[in-house]
Length: 262
Ligand code: DGL
Image 1 (cartoon, rainbow, N blue to C red):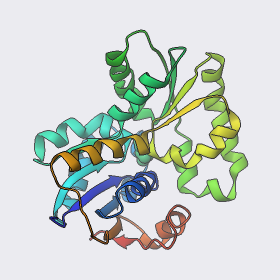
Image 2: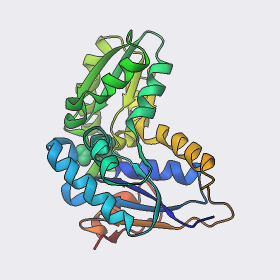
Image 3: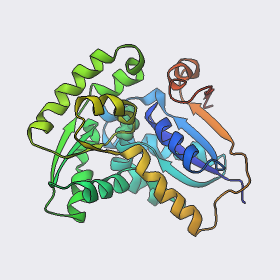
Image 4: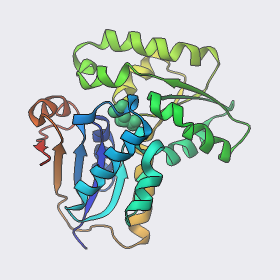
C-alpha cells in the first residue's frame, strides 16, 4: 500500500498501551510513536499549554509521512483535538469519543465512573459525550493527580502497595455511588487494569487506550489505506531522556528502544 505511518503520541508511557493495541490489531501498519516526556504530566497543565504541546507533537510526527494520527492521550484529546483538527489536514483520532460510546452502551444501572487527569475532568468532555448518547446516564468523575507520576516512576512493577493506596482513595467514593462501569479515562491507567480488577472485580472496565483502535481500523479499511503484506516498522521517540524512558517502557513492550526526538 502507501507505506505511510500512523503517528501516535502521548505525554509518556500511557500511549504505549494504545501502540500495543494497534500492533496487535493492525500488525502490518508502520507506527511512529512520540512520548512528550519533557512536558509530563499533561494532566496538571493549562489548556493553552496542552494545545501548544499537541500541535508541536503532530508537527514533529508529520515529518515521517502520516496517513493518520492517534492522540493516545485523553488530556490532549479533551483540550486540544479541536485545535489540532483546525490546523492539520490529517485524519486525527481521539481516545475519548470511542470510550464514551462504549461506556454508554455497557452500563446497565446507568452509573458510570470516570477516572482521569485533572485537566480531562475539568474539560467535562466525557460527561458531555455520554449525555449525547444517553442523557439518563449519571456520571461520576474523579481526578487522580497521583497516578501518572506514580506510573511513570515504574511503581506498577516495584511498589504496587503505594499504587493500591492511591487507587483506593480515588475508587472508594465511586464505589459508594454504586457505579457498574468505570472508564479508565487516561491511557496511563490501562497499565493498572489488573490492579483495578483486583480492587473492584464486579466493575465493567472501559479502556480509553484500546477503544480507539476500532475507529482507526474502520477508517483505514474504508479509505483503502490498510497495509497488507508489510512488515510493520516501529519508531519510538521521546522528547527527554530516552534511556530512562526505555527502562520503564520495556515493562510494557519487550525489547523496545526509544530514540531522542531531535
Ligand atoms: N496519558 C495521558 C492521558 O490519557 C495523560 C498523562 C499526563 O497527565 O501526562 O490523559
